[in-house]
Length: 102
Image 1 (tube, rainbow, N blue to C red):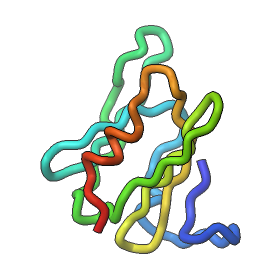
Image 2 (spheres, rainbow, N blue to C red):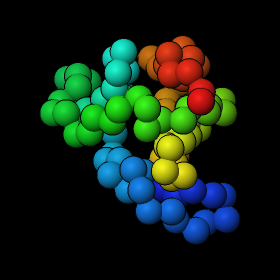
Image 3 (cartoon, rainbow, N blue to C red):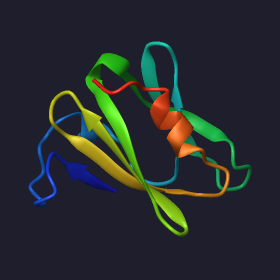
Image 4 (spheres, rainbow, N blue to C red):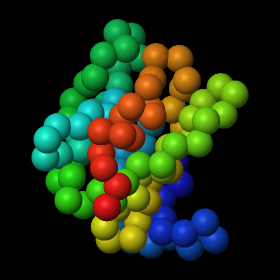
């Protein structure tokens, strides 16, 4: 996962620095973006890793690929978390639409 505020490679410190590494399960409520770990054995969410107020999320962008989607979560502080999400079993477009862009 790349973290930072721009594509030039210069990291912008902020919320993205708190975003956990590794396989994750993301969820959204009416007020928060929640991030859990992922159990390799069961495939189920495991242990809440991060919870962010939706007011701190500017939006989610997705770019489909052949095997994975590139997902960018942009935060109000100018930072961004970028990671890959497998195409099988993930509806990243629906997830992104659940968080209206600001």
